[in-house]
Image 1 (cartoon, rainbow, N blue to C red):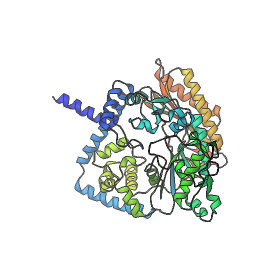
Image 2 (cartoon, one colour):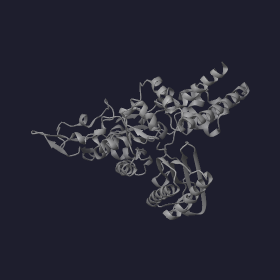
Image 3 (spheres, one colour):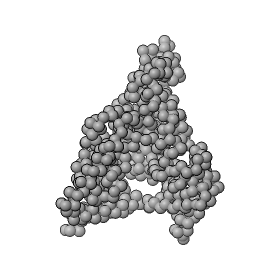
Image 4 (tube, rainbow, N blue to C red):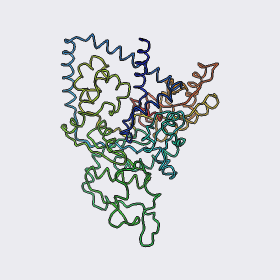
Length: 519
């Protein structure tokens, strides 16, 4: 009887990790129980399942250790921790800056939207970009079935048998991203790209300048391509943005002026931040036929949360007052905040913490159970604090290049792929006029195990041959470690890390590294 109970508990716990994460836009109101049952039945026996089970067990052990630690905390320790927490909160409050206007822009289902734009017959079908091993993103039709990014394609097919999976084309996505970034630069020349489809911008200076702009500088025409209808012109259907959601707000047709003709129609935008951001999104749509969502807030943390509020093709502004910020934060689920993933969420849930206000209420306890870095982050979140500084382009925190694939087990193919990544990285570094002393190679095998190897040199490197000489040795070491069995890979990532300097300005640093895992 106890064995059965233990098995049941194990399955229930494991399901909590495998369960549908419906925090993404377009996944509201789904039948979670039905979807979770399909996910479990489809994944059992797979390497994906085994890897997730292993990671779930690791998290459960951390939670058990944390709960034992909690049981030993005395009332006196809590009171002492509370004093320290209140002092820290007072210091953080003094640093609150509500003077900046930060915007987070996130393209809607970017890879999928690009593919739907270029292949119109896909726009009414549930589709995703990636492979049977892992998906990078899905369109909104597919999300209605529970299909989302970071889900193996074979599970997605069980959820949605009619799902169309399109292979990734990063050259195409990068080209579109470059077009979007040209528009970003008009509003903030020093915007911070976080990936191909999202960026942070500081609109503060732009808004100050915008107040004196004449109406002509705030007027933008619709694309002029049109078809004859006999009496007047109309926008071509293929010119419209892909249908992302049946009730997607703010379609281009809804914005047409009284002229009504595509060649003559134009839009005049105001001087407020809402109008400036709407103008930017309008220009992106007119240039790329893709839609973007945006969040406007006093700092980057809040702006990112806000950009998800009215997805797709919408925007949301959080007023720059402490009262508005605290009201916004009060019932915000912790998982909505960048930096709190499913592991942190599960550990916090074990302490009955599910919202940001709960974080503030339990901060003394958190300070005793988590590292100083972690509980300080939790405190900043509970106070609605975040960065108001957008690093200049040359100070950006990350640069990486990666490839996701079904399986690669031949050494010559792995070295060839590694060389391609080195070429991409060298090209990016050349554009930024950067060199790096540390080269890091991250590999994920078919069992979903991740290994990272790095080598720091006494000199900085930047050319393809220099980077490949290091990366090749790192890869060779990993291949030899698996011998006589082949190294079976499904993801390879290459990035410079540590002390990277601009060749013209020795000493500038990249202190942190963030990379967006495409699957």
